Image: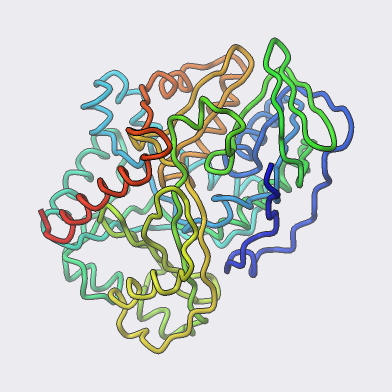
Length: 429
């Protein structure tokens, strides 16, 4: 097995994170009710919801808490799924959409509940904007507003070109959709705060404890280089960083990389000029750009997808032109940090939840909407292990297929599809 670099990446988040109290490595034999693989948002949310219900929980992390996508992402609280509810209506039917639709807005509420309950300092800000680059996209935002309102969500406001200019100092947008239930956070500090809450509730969390073997059966167990955990149930929450540990999960998903940069601090005046209300923004392109201000008034800007999760050699060269297309006034601004991270994409771009036998559950494949869905997934996993699997089964019943061409060709096929949709975005059709 190749050695894993378990240090946090050289990101703005790692540089500005609260100094995390380290958790020990797993050593020796342990038993619990639920063992969780992965100390990202899915695993941490599941652990907290289980601990609140009285379960004995052990979480195993191969690197550090929030080391993967949970500590590297754009930090945006975005409602719904990577494929919206109307796609679920068309592909899975009205009954499934009626089950999944209301849950599309629950993840953000869970984040706010955990932040308040456990006093997590993660720079939580309310409000996010979907930004339309052309008339077609603005019409789609109007349809999105009507769709979400049909499922009971009423925190939306359409913005015309003039109103958008008051939200973000960029000439690129013809309109937008303001979601007051969206928002943004320091993602690594959120994960660290959740991990500390796990500790306070009596859960055990072990870092630097990569699972190298899973034994399935009536009482599953996992083995690391230093120890072993047996449990009544196992939750697999490794997402894009699970590797080949569970072959049947790898077959229907693909790790993808996305990149971010952070500018030098802009100062209060310039920051307020760029994004006056401190909202987060994402555009409506298939390969979208997303950005926001940090607590110390840097611009955090991300975008693009690298299929197959290869790490680009020059992240700033890829992302800085996107930033300057949005904010040409930052031409002379220094870039202080550039980093990449992986998310897990499914062919349908809907999340995968399910069972491996009677004692093992999994959740993966948020396809770019992980900040909110992972927190919902943790709640659903806990509900299931405490006797109510209704909502979990709604996701588990979704059909998922392998990528065409298997792992050898999944990246080029996906890139070809992305090229097609990117051309549609450029042409505005």
